[in-house]
Image (tube, rainbow, N blue to C red):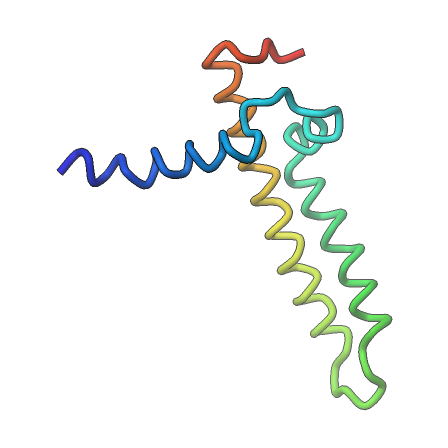
Length: 100
């Protein structure tokens, strides 16, 4: 039973290694990992403005749809930033990266 629970984690770690998950983070990755909420908020505002510009004129409430789509993109980017933070913690724990 324990092997079944660990199989998805092992598969994720193998995929992470194949995609370069054991490399040192770049300067931008460090900044994003330090500020996941700020990253999500900035992306949400930028995408909301972008979707507001693309909204058709005959739409009933373009501000609501642009804000909701921008919020969705901000959540996705914020969760990605949190995952990057966890990756960096794992690199420190494994001794691959010293945190500098």
